[in-house]
Length: 124
Image 1 (tube, helix red, strand yellow):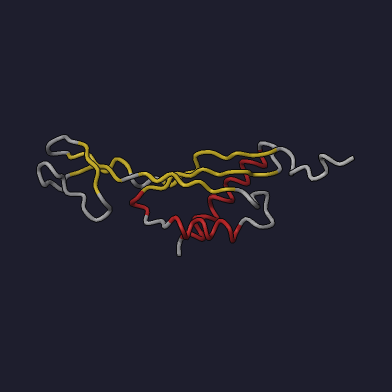
Image 2 (cartoon, helix red, strand yellow):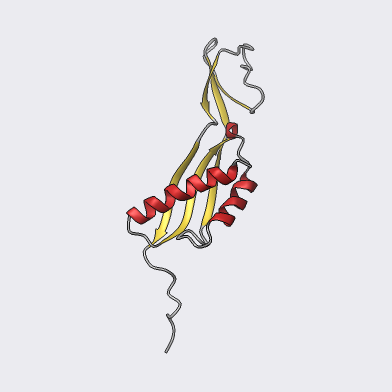
């Protein structure tokens, strides 16, 4: 389960960025994960829930944007989608291809709040 270490990295980077911006709470973290990274979203979500308690990201939502695998054929020049096991060009059967997408693993955005939830509002 390499997702635990990956999630720790995502969380560390997000907390550092949020704190540097003066935020006291993270509400949502959006990440892009490519199909070729072999990252399982369920494990990523599980690790996120396990690592966030006691941090400024406790209670935050992790949104995963899946990025499909695509490649460019250097023989016939087409761009095409493929799965993680088969990169063969569907037009000319060449393996002389350049991966275009599918290896992404990045934090796209972090939504923060400046104040913790106001639990005293509405009191008389």
